[in-house]
Length: 432
Ligand code: 4AD
Ligand code: MG
Image (cartoon, rainbow, N blue to C red; front, side, top):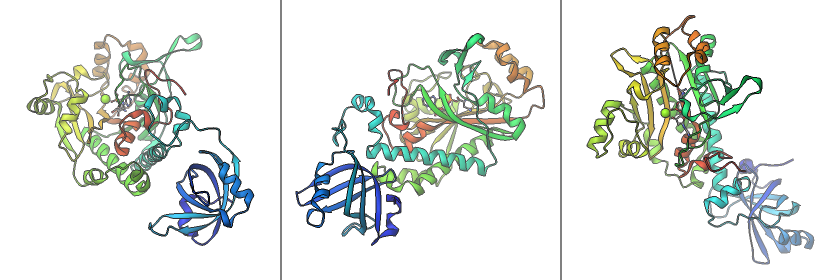
């Protein structure tokens, strides 16, 4: 039976069977240090020539980077480093001796690494990011279930746009004409809440945006949460609590991963202690102008504006109540000011940019029809099923969508979003 690296601390003095890969090897000719990995972690194995048969030593000598292997050995505590364990090799069998591995343990350019993404995933940094991504997904699922949200996934083939018609990916769909890849499952989540009250979907969404920034993918994962009877203020509170729950879970479960990434965790700790800042859109524009931005009322915030607004902030910043003109049809008109909507963006700290977009939804049939008709790109027929929801037991409701890779990028402290999803899809990259 295989013992995993993550469980070795309780096996000191015992002989275990290890199965995995060779990450790196140093040998003096008499003693070899093998850095091994098995998916759960990394460990050094020590092989002493004199205490091994000639056959086994020859096998060790022949091992190349990324060879797969099986080792039998005793677990020992590292002589100097506390909490670090080693394996004293008594037997070793290679499963497959790897061909010369293209990714040496040195700096490589991003294009080369991206071409070799299927192999690059094995590097220590990518291992850490993949694991953090998994913990973030787990944290989201746990938090939402704790709050009574049921998972009800949305379709990916859709007949209409959720987030504007300019970023749709069309797909030929049999005799029915064109389908589009979903931009967000929100509209379907709005239908499902009338069945289960609170729900969420979690899956891939698609945007045909020609953005080549460090924060844009053409395929990314989004969690859309939606709740009946949740109004604007509560919606913001849920977003704040969710983000804090994610950070807390990462700090508790990803110590090793964050260390590998050399992530300073102090800002993550600190943001748990205070409430998030809330600016109205109007306040945000004023503030940005004071800080030297030339953004005008009615314009969307760019990357630089988001950075400027959160520059000295220890906590993420909500920007709420945007002009309705620059926001989608489904957002509810603010009863206090018909020119704006009850929505929010949540801008992360440390240059994370927009992590969440959310809003209270227009629940009045007539007002919703007006918004759809006002938008010259939308055909009201496409939205009949959606507007039906306002005819049969309409209730005030709100929701939001969080971008998984944006969150992974921020928490892991990764520069480019392409490293935050196993196989990134960018404007100029579809392979591997
Ligand atoms: O702000 P967005 O467009 O909101 C919606 O799609 C709503 N329908 C969600 C809802 O209310 N249920 O997207 C939500 C989040 C953004 O805040 C951002 O984190 C992420 O999705 N996002 C992207 N992530 C990576 N690449 C892109 N091209 C992204 N576009 C949006
Ligand atoms: Mg947005």
